[in-house]
Amino acid sequence: MNIRTISQMAAQPTVAFIILMGVVSLFADMTHEGARSIYGAYLPLLGLSATMIGFVTVLGEFIGYALRLLTGVIADKSRNYWGMTIVGYGINVIAIPTLALVPENGWMLACVLIILERTGKAIRQPAKNTLLSYASSQVGLGKGFAVQEFLDQLGAFLGPMLLFCVLWLKGGRDSLEAYAACFAALTIPAVLTMFFLLKARRKFPHPERFEQDTETNLESRTQKRFFLYILAIGCFALGFVDFPLITMHVAKLKVIPADMLPLLYAGAMLVDAFAALFFGWLFDRIHFQALIISGLLAAFFAVFIFFINTGWGVIIGVILWGIGMGAQESILKSAVVTLTPRENRSTSFGIFESCFGLCWFLGSWLMGWLYDTHLTSMVLFSVIMQLVAIPLYAFLQAGNVAQKER
Image (cartoon, rainbow, N blue to C red):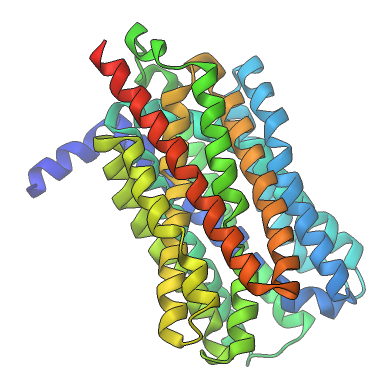
């Protein structure tokens, strides 16, 4: 592909919209992932115990996923996709910088702001994914969502790096003043988030015009196949270990220096970003077979991390974990579009993300308990639940092939 071809593609309105929304995600993730990287060190300074920190963060995540079921329906009923996207991002970018103003012992206000940030994501996510799907349907669903995920994870990498620089300039002081400076610094990507979002809204007020649906496409979008897909990704989510459990295990093993653990997470995010690009491209060519391949690769990450007690074992396991995350954030969303009608797309995204979040929450909770009681059972549960999803993906792929042969 030569430079002229690339420039021609970039000039296409659909590609320009996807990239512009990807830039919005980049700065938004710099804001909230940067903040999340220091919550664990910041909240104890306000007087919160480990139990309370765990409760607040888990409650925030649960609300962030569960509310999407409702906000997806509201988005489809109102058709105000831009409005909900702007409100959701607006809440996000106000809540995080406001943490810089939390006074000493103001833990209650901090908790409210953290939960509010997750609520903002719940409001925007189904509507934003729907807007993106209109453009992605013209350039390739896998590629469209993959570009979004790549830029999203780039922001997730740059946010913590920005705060690392702020803390270094502050002399690495573990104080409320230093963390307030961190949250204040996040005002920069927060403002840029809203700038590029409003620019996208002004330049592309009607993204739905990008997509021209056909009767042929609609024939394959049946409720039965969609809920079979929900069952498949539910199994995958149940067996997918949350990263804090991984870092806790690695820290206990001491096979990687403690000060290198943030870099381990950053590395996982980079693998996630590039895996999303590759598997998004693959989805546009072989559809659900891409899910089968990524699922088979990711299924065994727990074996390497929790059974092979070496640094290389952990690194290989984290790479496989990153591949699973990349698939989750790109081709899983692409598949939702192929299985649901356009008029109910935000509702479908809401159902998908709420079910995924609930299953991930329950699975992580169960595997945390199994980790404390019987490590082998935890690893077996993780592997088996992810492998159970594979034949369901294969069944969906067979349905795609049968549809094309009609």
